[in-house]
Picture (cartoon, rainbow, N blue to C red):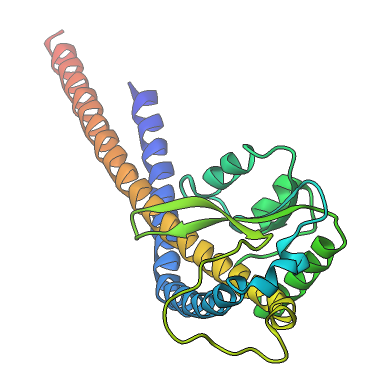
Length: 266
């Protein structure tokens, strides 16, 4: 009986330590949510503005001859964006599960977990700057023009709400032709194809930055929800263990009293 009481006490302490850890991680995630969602909103707006310009250019007949709309290479390259840490529910697992559906793709990982997964030099997704995105986008565009791959996709996590995030594959290159919109047509100088070719690296950089910011916001939200759930489960476990401990103590005391009464009767 004494051994049971001791093991229950040790278990309660262990779960209580876990509870304190989950609370601390939940608070850290909460402190990052506002900044993460603010940055996500800003980059979404920027990416949307760049997309509008590219959409107008892609509708021009002259741009159909652009090398960005006529892939010359073969194969697929994926930029896979995952988190820097674990303990975020299914956040990283969902990204890697989707990446596994394209096993033939060449992967460029962003995020420490993705780098570990695909064996690359560690790159932080949280601190991946706009300048880093520009360097990556320029390299991807050069490789695409050199025919090193046919398609470029970005695998990221789309932020839907605090409760819901979805692993998503966005195809970036080659560019697809769009239909002309009604209304006044913009005038590009010197010509549409020249502007398109010059704008594509900026477009890829903007899309990549937006995907990274959205993935980080999703990671923070997923970790907050995971820590809230883990904390709730830990507290419920402590309550159950405390009840078992109290019953064991009561049984132990009752047994001791019975033995004392029995001994005094002799």
